[in-house]
Length: 205
Image (cartoon, rainbow, N blue to C red; front, side):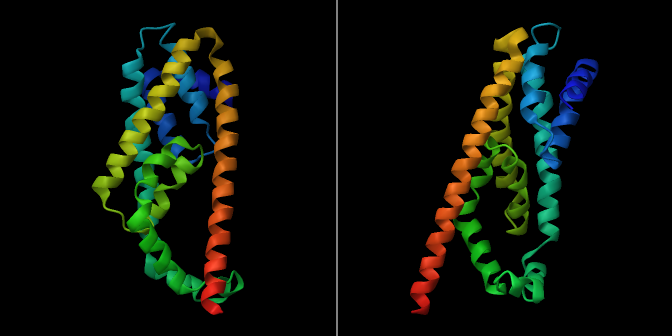
């Protein structure tokens, strides 16, 4: 896949970068690290520029995020409540009331996560779905997504340009970053789950 991505960017330039970043947001397995770092490298061997690459990539990030946000809006709170109220929800020990709790949490504390999750591979795309499900206002969603994407894309494009012919070495460090970020996220999720479990047990007792 990496060879195909680099060949595509090399052929279509700015347009190719924007399209690939759009697809990367909808299909997280497509690595933005490869797309953006190679885009940065191309600025050292062609007439393409770093600002141009950033301007081309950010709209792709925003439009891709809006697609997932729209999917989240379709999977609204009422539909989830009906789904969790059925046999599948009972099998997972979820209740319709859990939807309200998640919805309220996102409205109070979760909106800023749209910004911070833009720096975590895979999660950076998927965060758009709960944002839509929680009916997050479109303007803040676009704002957080734009600023987060602008920072992420600029950093990776700049790293690719700085590395030059050694741009692929940057991917080793981004892979390490990805693994570390996912581990931290997993640990945080476990801690939150334990805390919620203890809180629920305490209420029951």
